[in-house]
Length: 279
Image (tube, rainbow, N blue to C red; front, side, top):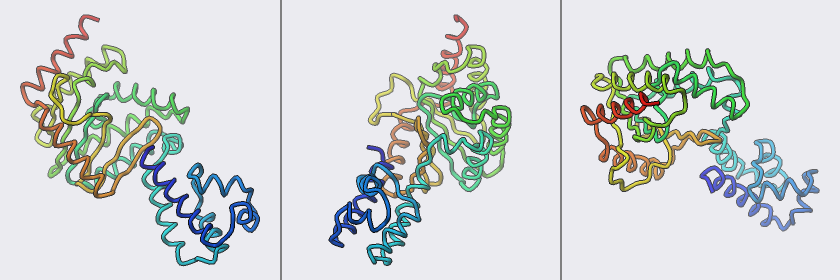
């Protein structure tokens, strides 16, 4: 169960508790609300998230308006911290990139680990184009690819701004993951080599043979130790819970300790680049 699902189930359980305390069964309560019993059941079992209006009517009907603020806060956490990609991309790729840029601008220290792709801030236009095509095709959303690529290039200008710090860790597998034509990947790896030694950028590669104490199951962004952003196949997660932030910091530290940089990182990139020449 994901964090989002667990939180939705917890909210449903809280609502069921309030309804049970009133002495009403689900069917009788649904009748008072004017809802089908199935809606009450789905909300209480976490199969459906309530709306803000649902919560208001729920507390009014049970005569417990004092808990509305608590319930609304829980709902706001769900809506803020979990956003399905279909909803995220409804306004287009460009809008999503601009939202990322706003988050990055507000952070002084930005850390990004990627296990399967080259980090967006280090992507070439051609590589980014193929990533956007794959994403919009999968989710069947607006394909404003050119605008999205341009917005990503605008985001990358932050790498050259004084006083900013960007740290990237890439699992070696991402250097060999062909999500684009070989010639596009070759150009991308050449650019990655060129980023080594850049003043505002720290780049490390986690070798495939590294002795890891953690499992790099997915990529993540860490902003100023106050926000973690995770991109899953179906959604984007924004994590602010202190305990979870501590876990991601621990994973980052372990991966960083297993990574190589400088000449060693360059050798790994060069080997991946050389493998493309035989294709």
